[in-house]
Each structure stands twice: as C-alpha cells, then as structure tokens.
Image 1 (tube, rainbow, N blue to C red):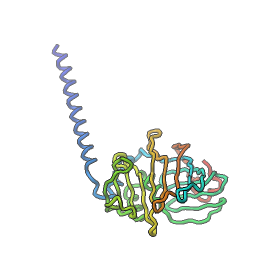
Image 2: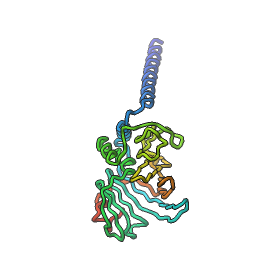
Image 3: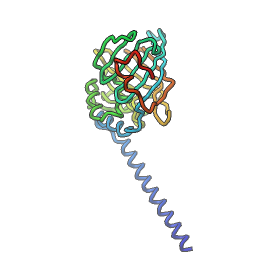
Image 4: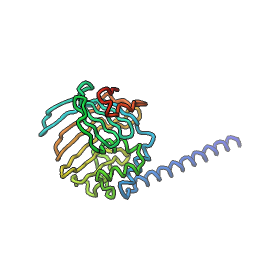
Length: 260
C-alpha cells in the first residue's frame, strides 16, 4: 500500500511538473508571437532560425507558364526548372531541345536562345532569395542583398493576407503597393508576397497554394502582376527534392548539354 501511494505520488508529481513546463512553454510561445519585430532584419533572422537545416536544399519541378494580356491568355508553355542552394537556378523554356532558357548563378543571370548566350547581367533574383536562399545564407548576407534590392528593412508592419496574419517589410502602410516590400506568413515564416518598384513600374508577385510535401512547405502557384494586371501564372507539378545536384548544370558553359 505504501509503495502504491508513493508510486502514485510520483506519477502525480511528474504529471504536475510536465504540465507546468508545458504551460510555461506555451506562455513563451505566445509572448514571442505577440512581440512585434522592430525591423525587417529581425524577421529575416527569425525565418533563418526557424528553417535552418530544415528547408529543402535542392528543388526540381516543371511548371505550366500561362501568359496574359488584358486578362486574356496569350500563350502557354511548359518549363523545366531546378534549384540548388544557394542562388543556383536553371530554367528551360518548353523543353531541353528548345535551346532557350536562363541560368541564375552568383547574383548574375545568363540568357540563352538556341543554346547561344545572349547576355549576362548582374541580378539578385528576389523570389529565389526570399523563397530559398534566405534559409541558407547567413542573415547578414540576406540583409545585405535585400538592401541592394532597395527593400527598406527599417519599416515593418502587420496585415492580413488570404486570411492569415503576415509581417510586411518595406513599408508601414500595407495599402501602399508602390513601395518595394515583402510579406511573410507570421506563423510559418515563409514568404507569401513580393512587391517591387523598378523605375516607377510596380510589380506584385503572389506566392500561393503552399502545400506540405515530404514534410516541406512548397508553393505550387505564383501570380505575377504588373501595374495591377495579371501577366503570368505559374503552376508547379512533377515536384521533387533531389538529395544532391550536379553543380555543372548551373555552369553557363554547359547550358546546351545540361540535363536533370
């Protein structure tokens, strides 16, 4: 009987301790969620901390590219794409045999037509940076690149996006779509919207339809709008997460023969 009482007592004590720890943990979580970040740098740091070593380092997929003009579909293509961290992206337009596509590598973009290099330009791809690279670069590196892209990280606010809470970095007024800004899901800490303003031309990119695949969050639709008009819709399919990638795929000199 005494042994039984002590055993039960021990169980009750352990249970009480567990519930106490859980309550403290929940309180801490609520406190973190209730604390508004003082600037965009803190949001970048939180994104990195949340998904470091958990985001997918390699990503391969096909996409239906649907082009619009004045709300009318003008063209449809199927593109093949592969990404490898950090900053490597290879896109083929309408199949490998077309000889057309682009390669993003080391903050430069290489354009190809008929397997011939048409030009090279220094470019930091904001969607690649905010959707993938942000989880692999140090926060300091990401912040430097975002500043180069003219995002004002000193400005941050909150808003609703598709029914979910979001951080808005780059403006204090979420209705001000003329300011370069990016929106981050407050709970899941992935990017859901990117707005840029290049020479007075506002562009709005919606990163939609996130789904969990192999325990990864993956956006399966992206909408591109220019001056409020839909110009391109991308729908992703045949999605995979290669364990490794052949880095030669991202060498511009290998564009004509690159396959995956």
